[in-house]
Length: 274
Image (cartoon, rainbow, N blue to C red; front, side, top):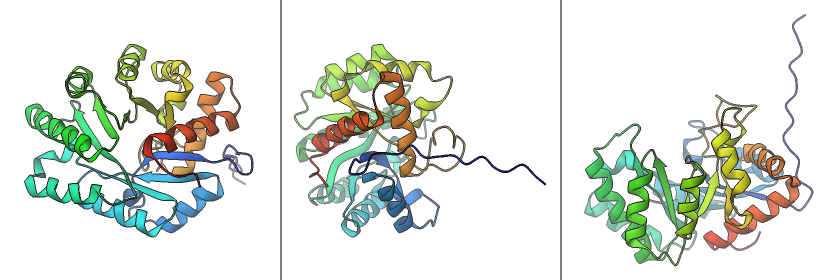
């Protein structure tokens, strides 16, 4: 007989306590997966609301449709740096219309990616600046994607500051020195499942040191699944592993960490309590 597989238990929240997955891509889970089942499973585990994120015009439209279909889902719209070469004036005119829909709670994800560089740096910068301006015009929080582009990300944000609607450095990937500069701009920091990885010491330091009122959680599903699911498809309920890891790092209960990060996300995205 083969060895019996060890059951992996999901961290358990007390009844009535929830935690928000502040950044995922529901339309990419599967692909062709059962979105209804994904949202239901998350809710049963105490993960709600879920914010599903646009990365181009098509996915932004999908995010808006999902937010209209599900009470616990909210949307963001924007053009990811990987996709900016396909965007033009008509794209941004359509995104501006989507921004006016009530359940669109942020603009993004936008930013710079100097790792994969699907678009030249100058093109990425042009669209990043344009979209920062659009987010400010629409009075929406910014959701920033930053991969090895810290200096340019900060330079533009400082030039365009202040940001009355705030913003979040999604899937934070910098060190504590960078985190301080992000916080100084009035932004908050979102920690993904990478924090559960053994060699993620820098991210773990940030997760420990960030003021609790400036911290939110995300999965970035279907990407970046936390331990013990590393390398597998990520789903919203797995944000609980991230929450438990950060609670342990900070010497808090899972309940306290969940309560505070949920309140932070509700406040940033102006989402009513569920």
